[in-house]
Image (cartoon, rainbow, N blue to C red; front, side, top):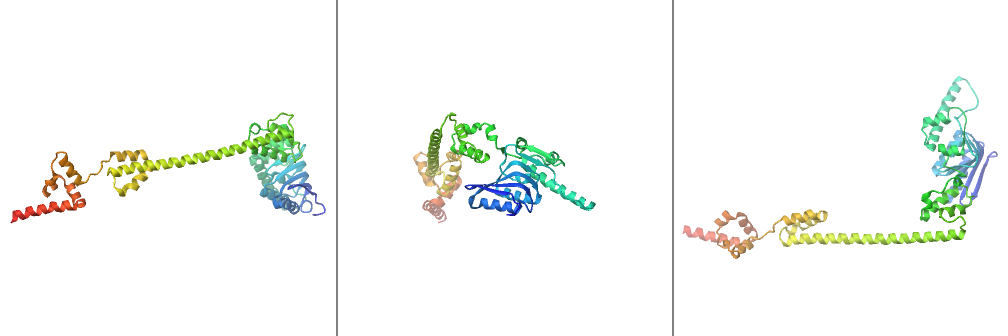
Length: 377
């Protein structure tokens, strides 16, 4: 790294703090040096946090490069002491943004040193107005405040000092290092028997406090144990919760299997019911075999209406059966009908006889032929 660089790398296993102090410029704490440290720390699955410790700003363009990398990687940021000017852009890039005890942000509109003729100054003013708008977008995205309010509140030309509590209020920070001791543990976490929910809450709070907090009191409180609980009590409680969680998972699997079995059985019963309905209609000669699949599909979609339709149908009776029924029931004996009588009294029956009872039809026609021969002899 360069001679004037003030970048410290504090490694804690796979968790690394990249600590930046002083001025950010192309000579001191350059974007290349900071980004290199971040990339090294996050390689091979590592996690990094960028800590701005008494970082007084500097080059906007160097800060923007770091901002983009932190955003891309989804890293957290932290302020210890003062974070001013362009350094606040880096801070705002953090996914989770923490401010330490007595930490301060200093926000103001960008400026440039030097002078020049009137045209140079006008060009510089235009450039600064453009940078101020970019600052405004970053602050607005970070806090959720409308851009016009951000511009009036923080980029109006003055220096604006924001302490940790104000930073939380405005939305610049998502937590401060003492927040875990100032606020009660959420009721939904305390009431939860979900081990993962409790673990997630602990992890977040421990990271916020830089892995240096006394974890046991927080764990005891979250598990709803007494203040005098020991580590063994915590272990016993967590073991019981894990056991309960596993039992619930097993019960869930069993219930899902039972539900699936019921669905399969219900589907099979529906198919059997539909087949029985359609087969009964076939036996009653209400429908033809060629129509079976169509009525079966209709029954599966709407059993009640399909059953009503089939019930309203009359079964088909062959003409030969009708002729037998006429004799049996004392009706007119159609066996003695001539072709003329069939044409007059039941032309549809004659048509069906021609199709389905060829022998009977041919016999009928033969009678007609004999009759014609008799009268023409």
